[in-house]
Image (cartoon, rainbow, N blue to C red; front, side, top):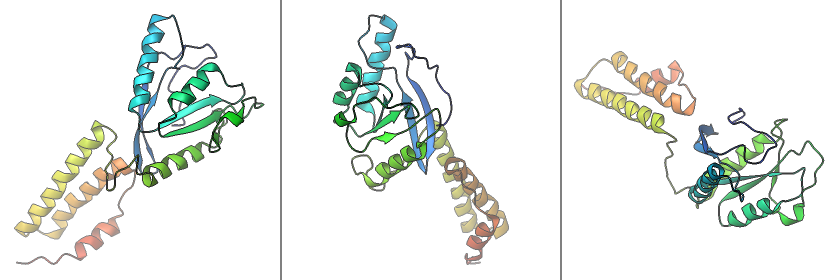
Length: 214
């Protein structure tokens, strides 16, 4: 996300609730869920956060397990490694800008070393996520469509309405320049989801290929 979204300190238990954010990674819309650490605690409020974290872990399509590379593995780290073993996961070793103290012999070979502070190797995370969603059948069913939130669904519905207007106009024999307005609007709506915009020349080219009967 490359943004600060939560209060972070060296004190365990600072994060107590689930934080959600919608992002688009190379064409893959995702809902990211940042959870409280899963650990034993006597704090009732923190216990609720831990339970929510466990629930999110079970329901997630993909788990990003972040470990502190500058410290040895803790009992909590080993617990997370164990309970996430059967999930689709990416293990991230953060704080690689510091001296490394973690025992990598206990970790899989495909971990990604990152430094959030220095923005190092974040692109590798995005690349791994992209590859998983397009190549791993356990994550993506063939020809599946991903809509990340209610806003995207609303935009798709508006795009369909706009295309229906173009189709009705074609059936009624309306002038091409009038239909072009609706088609351009459709492309603009879809561009709000993908981040792309259609050049005017492309719209014109599409309509130049129509043969309208009288």
